[in-house]
Image 1 (cartoon, rainbow, N blue to C red):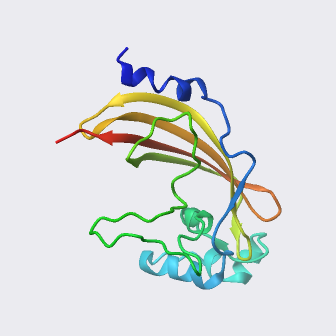
Image 2 (cartoon, rainbow, N blue to C red):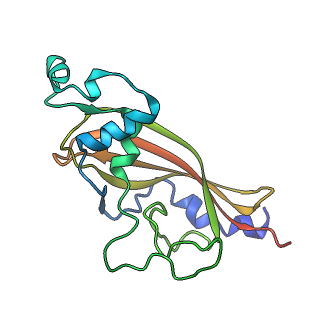
Amino acid sequence: MEDWKKAWQPMIDAVGTDFSDGMEQWGADEVERGAIRRFLEPLEFDCPLHYDKSVANEYGYPDIIAPYSSLLTWVIPPYWKPGMQLFTSAERNAQPTESPLLGFETDLALPTKFYFATDIEIDYIKPIVVGDRLCRVGYILLSCVPKETKVGRGAFTVWESEIRNQHREVVAKIRMGLYFYCPHAN
């Protein structure tokens, strides 16, 4: 095995580890009626469960439910908070100093410059209802496969988390694939 691949062995050995250290990562906002409406509009998604409380009640829901496809809208923490300077560089492709999408840091992984998502799987378990507040719990490494691609050398990883509401009920499970890499020198 090539040396750069061997350097990923600590991550490979950590498969099954929860890197969240028990931390709950709460979404920026409660699920609210106006945001559901704005989600539905461009899709012209005409299902009364998502806008008519009496229909939602008729089917056993306490209020309108958010479309399952809107789950990530309610899970992602805020990018910016008052008093925070998000960008410290004015260059064209400047990256934010922090991002809620980066996951959890570990000193087991090799330092990489970039990453991209490769795939996502979501198991929807319970409807999301107006007034819910969602959090992500757990950041379990399911796999780590070092690989050289056309963009660089790195590792394909798969991570799993649960999404829970304010009552600690699991509403979904998410598995996301990410490729962390250092680009090839030009």
